[in-house]
Length: 360
Image (cartoon, rainbow, N blue to C red):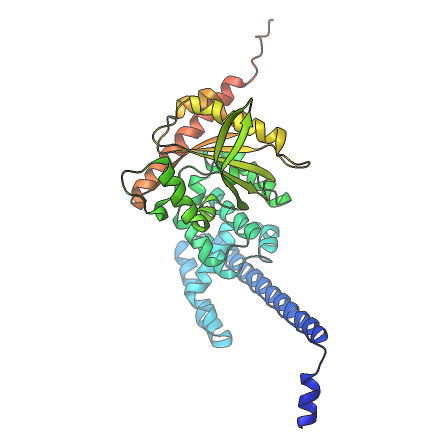
């Protein structure tokens, strides 16, 4: 007995490690496959109930059939088929009507992820969180936190007209490539910095570096820190970039310029100088042009639109060092989305080609 124990103890560590890796990899694949099958089963059950309810076209019938089914299924298959869970399955089939999309997402998201998604009323919001959870590998907890922070409403994407928003999400689903509109936010919530009412730009920068991990999480997918107060020299003049990052998903350098008070038009020229210098001296082959984020404690939207900052690769956003009540933030974001979409729709109409009247 001791001899056998000694022989196991003397086993080749590399061999043992490889076999453990194979076993654990297989276990993960089995768990993933089981999760996918369970999710598809729940969708199929929900869809079958949905079809039956639609054929009868009676709300009371729907509640009755769910209760009846639950009582019978729990006897055979246990509490996983309670009336509450059957209603979740029914809602699942209603919210995600395309089985192909469900099949793809089920390989990356658990049933618990879908429970966080299916009761979101806005289909585009729901699609955003589903795609980002799958692309970024968010845990259920991370998904819940991002929903609670109103991430979707704070993205640049949410400010676009709905048809463009839908196109961007469809592109993400097909290619898996993020674009800046999916990553950039407004406002950025920096309540974790612990700043009081009075502080200088240097205090803001110091606080960000102290809480760099939290700041990277707030920035979003793919960011890594490169430098603080990066010195660049142009015509023997020294300039300093507040914060320099790289985003691996966007494959580009990202400059962050910190400002107290409202945005001023003069900030555009300063940021353009930084971006063009980086494009000339730091941009690598295969990378996209550098991107600039000007963080201000306030901004005036019409000035920003007139300056056409998007064309220069510049994003202006507010930062909040104190988190307002959720209903206040929600109302502010909703108003910003409505105003931005209306302006973009109006601009699209003005830019549309006009045709001379036809003569008879």
